[in-house]
Amino acid sequence: MGILCESFVGRSVKKLALDSLPVVQCVSLLFASSIGAQQRTPPNERFPADLDRYIQRVLVDGRIPGVAIAVVRNDSVLVTKGYGVREMGKPDRVDENTVFDIASLAKSFTATAVAMLVDRGVLQWDDPVRKYLPDLVLPNDQLTTHATVRDFLSHRTGLEAVNMMWVLTAVDRAEVLRRMRYVPVRLSPRQSMIYSNIGYSVAGEAAAAAARTTFEALLRDLVIKPLGLLSSTWSYEQAAMMPNVASSHATIAGRQQPIRREVQRQPIGAAAAVQSTVTDLARWMRLHLNNGVLDGKRYVSDSSMRAMHTIHVPIATTPAMRAARLVEDTLVGYGLGWQVMDYRGHPLLWHTGNGDGQIAYMALLPRERLGVVVLVNTWSAPLIHAALVNRILDTYLGYEARDWAGETLARVPATLRAQDSAMRAVAEMKSDAPPPLPLSAYAGRYDHPLFGPIWVRLERSHLTLQMGEGQTADLEYHGDAGFWVWWRDPLFRENYGTHVRFAVDRDSVTALTTRINRDEFTAQRSKSSALPTNRRGVLFSPWLSTEESPSSPAPLEEWAEGSRPSSLGRAHGSSSPVARRRSTSASMSGRP
Image 1 (cartoon, rainbow, N blue to C red):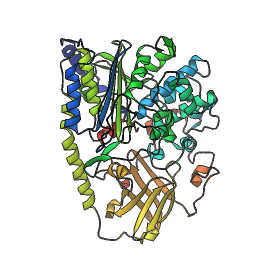
Image 2: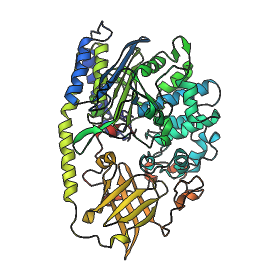
Image 3: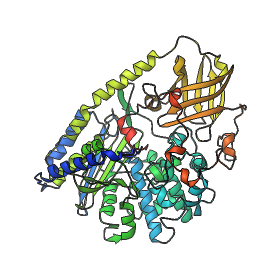
């Protein structure tokens, strides 16, 4: 989400051991003393020529198809500029009006739309979401009754992210909301952040219901059109029809190439629907740096702006993370649509976005009234968006130039070699011996309340696996490791490879177990082979037709790590060489 959040901090939250706190404080003091002593010479130019040349060189050195940047300061636009091409092998250039996939940067748009509703008295930050979504059922009674709009906008519900539920299965937004009752509770609520795209879907739909409209109409009529964001979308699908759009790129089978547009974004519209340009995002940064005022008109109140820009849930950090990002302050956390920390001691609001094959990073320094956004149309240069933002911030803050991009690109060859080695290891795992049962014995329907139904079919001489009506993979037998999942979509094949294992009782297959990216689950073999649909014609599992979760709700005092289902162990294939080998940029964005 940045970054992380798979955001840079964000996808997973790790507890910092108490005995390491003095080390963190010591590191912070060291950086404070050394950084604070640096002589700073801010530039006089609006856009220094050496910075312009640096960005151009980065595109060449990193073989990056296209980049767009914007810098604003003191409510003025210093630069909006594009570099490179929209798509490899084609001449169309990126300019300041090229539309990029900004993915999770859209979370600040959703939070701002809610802020406007709060200002109008339509809802309150601490309203329970069920006030507006009466049919919503969460995993236990306490969450169902008490989880608020603020909780979902700040990722502090304690619910697992379960991204593969919407990425792979082709479910729609309504089905995502219905499946919320089955999402595992990992942490106590309001204690720590678990970055959640589906949580933003809940908040966005609650806001739309409060305003008696759709989420897309809410975003369009309350935010995008009134603010004059002329080339920004309120639904992901719009961009496909626009004339000046950046294509996505990724490294597939060792070669950077254009990839298809993402097709499964509607389920999480409130998390990642917006596509935009640096021209529009310059206006967006001015709004947030100017405390809710744009072109002399107030759109958001002071109090609502403070709510968005204030930490509502802490994020645990490590000394390595703080040193790498030059974080001096002691508190890092998530606001509403923004991550909050500091850069070299300067208070920082930031977020990243990570759609398939594109990455984005926006950074605001409120004290300096300085904002930077960088949009990149490839996954093949991990973290280059953050490196460019750091270089731009250093330039305008007057720090000595550091080759952030060079340091980042220098790590890419080792990453690629490791990935190549992992793929060779996977190829060597192919077994010449047949599976213990005839292939036809594995075929059938497997049910899981979040990720099902999963269909295993026999096609000619091999098995295939399909997630609902979504992604399909070919299965390759790897002996004791199980079956390797070769997704037919090239991007998923490259990034979501894993093993699936089948449980056998005598001569019958009873379940399959796997881990895809961060989501691990066991799906039970169904006695039915029919393909039922619900009244909307959407595939569903019999488990999902009930009104209650198959497990009893956990009481409030058990909302903790200890109440999480036990690990499935290595059987699901998490030990496979590339089970978690998504590119670094992809793994940081919280997906998207």
